Length: 249
Image (cartoon, rainbow, N blue to C red; front, side, top):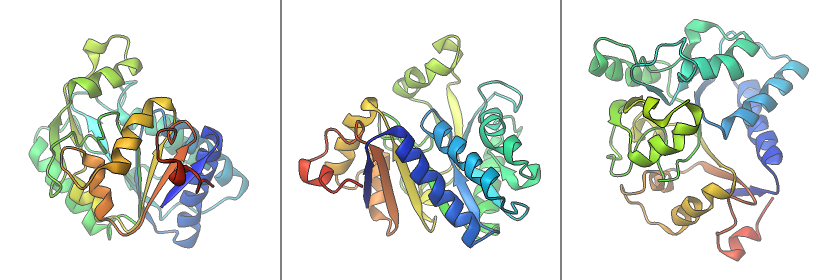
C-alpha cells in the first residue's frame, strides 16, 4: 500500500501516529527501528505525541536494524548515540529493552547469531520501520544480499559510504563494515513501514515500483510481505506512474 503526502512533516506525522497506535494497542510491543535523516522528524513527532499522551513504555522492546563496526556507543556517529539523542533518552526507555547490534563485540559472528535469536525470543517484531538507501538497501543489506539472510556482517558499498559521508567530518572516516539485521529477519515482522522522503529518493522509489523481486534490489524483497505500507512525500514519489500518484493521501 502506498501513502503519499505533500510534505515531509505530513509523512512524519503519519508514521509517528502508526508507531504510537502500535504501542497503545500492545504495550508490550516489539518494534524494529531505523536511523538516518529520514527518521529524525519521525522520532521528533513520536516524542511530541508521547509527551502529550503519556503511555507506559516499561514493557516496550526495541531492536534497531544496524550498527557500524568499530564505533562504540559514545561515538557521535554510532547508531546507539543517534537513538539515545533522538528517541531513547527523551522517552526514558529502559536501557535493557532498547537493543542494537554490538559493533564492538569480540565475537562478531556470535553477536550476529545472538541478535536474530533475541528477536525471536522476544516474540518477533510487531512492526519494522525502514528507510531505503539510494541503491535500494534496507538496513545495511546491500545489493545481492540473500533474501534468506539473518543478522550478519556486511561490507558497505562505495555508494552507501558516499551517502553516509555527510554525517562524518570526512568521508574517509565512514566505517567500511557494519552489522545489519538480515532480510529474512525483516520479512518476519508482522508489519512493515518503509519511509522515503526527498527528491534524492525519487529514482530508487521509481525503480522499486517497477522492479520484480530481485536480490539486486534488496528492498524488492518487501513485495513478498503481506503487510507493507510505503510512505512517501511528493518529491520521493515524483517519478512514480501518474495513476499511482493519483492515489495520494
